[in-house]
Length: 459
Image 1 (cartoon, rainbow, N blue to C red):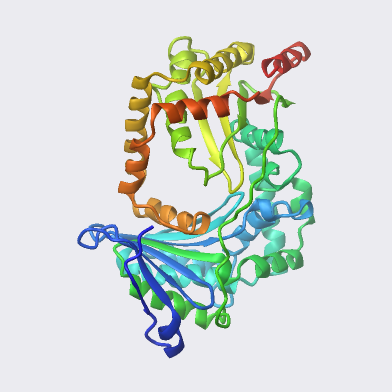
Image 2: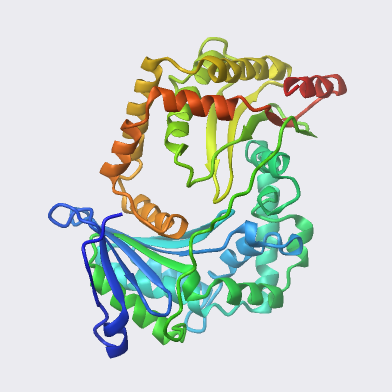
């Protein structure tokens, strides 16, 4: 992270003008790609990236709360609260919230993850003040009424049912439980039918007040925008809502700590009458702050991240055993996952798993060729840039970076870091990650003899 000085940006409040800190974190050429950050004395952070060549802007607020912050009885509260913030504030009804953005052709949504929640709106650049006002109002002025909690409970139970009807989604929740067990990272983000039915308006209000303090929020905005104007509009919205705290409130730091994930050889199966069997074979990965994550990204790309990857070629192209097969990584603050997913006919499960296990063992022992690594580096660079071609993706990048890392990395620096990955680094991370004993999660129509054989896969 490079700092190019600081200055006060607040112009309507003498106190804020004296203490608000603004930094240029990334200096773009001719203003394009410039990332700036303002930190208020009451703990709220605002990060923006300018892209004058577009006519849109995406505004988001990231909350430092996810499903891993829930107790067992509160499982699903973070996601429930995400729904409720759209149900009305002291200034707007639910219809007025949605109509305001619809009327200007914008889009508004939110998502909940295990370690954060994000609310955002994408609009024309001229409509950015409206988006700022609506999203800030939702985050600071939610009423969380009893009747809204009761109505939304039904919608969330339907969302849980919809997920369970899609075994391709459900198997990822099963794999998290296989790897983490009955702790917050192993529980579903949506919660369960029992926990959602047990959540009351009062419990959700307390959860809201605890986790939606300005010190736990990061505002992110990207597009054809002016940083100082965004800062003024956000400050005005928070002041109007009475959400400004006293001075000297420090922002919550990124999650830290080191948690060793010691899961090996666990198997969890759900017998379900489906046309396909859905399987994930995986093992502990790396935390999102581990410097080896760059090498793991290259390894993942070559192993199962594309149509030219080893797993795709071996399982689908050469043998036609699956339509969808891929590998992926998930990094959390203190641990991570590496997994291989495949959906196949139930009769082909053992063949698919054997091929996947053989490829993992082969790469762990002999790694990838230099040509495969060079190919994966180029592919990862290209996909990184192409994935940042709209203001929504840019908002996600700077918001998540501030919340999870506390710093920003330019696209050029990211490309340089990927390009600097050496074959030896890839080989080392392949031995460390793929050399572990895997665990297995399967959803599908499993006969008793099949289920018994599946345990042999991870032996």
